[in-house]
Amino acid sequence: MECKTAVSLMHDYLDDDLSKEQRLLLKAHLLSCPNCRMDFKELEQTDMMLYSLPHNIPSASYELTDRIMNNIPQRKKQKVWVKWMKVHPAATAAAVFLIIMLFSAFNIFNQDNQLVIQGNDLDEVVINGNTVIIPEGTTISGDLTVENGKTEVFGYVQGNLTVIDGSVYKASTAHISGEVKSVDRALDWIWYKISNVFSEVVYR
Image 1 (cartoon, helix red, strand yellow):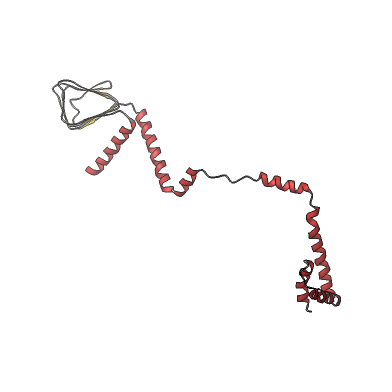
Image 2 (cartoon, one colour):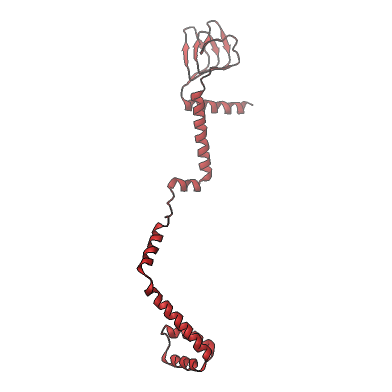
């Protein structure tokens, strides 16, 4: 028997997987080959040591292993909205941008209390504190917009009148040829601003 064959049979011998004939052949080879006999003894000692090792482990080691495994941080489950944000990054960015814009516009709407008047013909307009007065017998050509103030109309407005965060009073002598728009809420104000932006883009 060759040494290579003997070495391969040693493992099977220790596992008790050899036939009677193979056992006899391996024993005969070990008696005639000192190198294989030494290898077999080392392999047998190693196998015996490994076999006896589990029986010598104290229960404290198992308890230590359990404690270590129990103290390992568990992987946190991701929340549904976090998963959705990872799957839809573009929609998430758009939503965040929209929220920021809405809050910014809302803050501007609430914080800006300065009286603002916009129109092409403002020479005949009278301003008394936060009240914009269009006197009787006067004519305002074009659209008129008043922000953060009261508007009292006694004369003529040849266009639209828009009042943002304010009030409108129309006397019996007043005449407005266009629409009268009153914007009192933040969302209406935002929509009004967006509409104006698009209108300016279209007419430019």
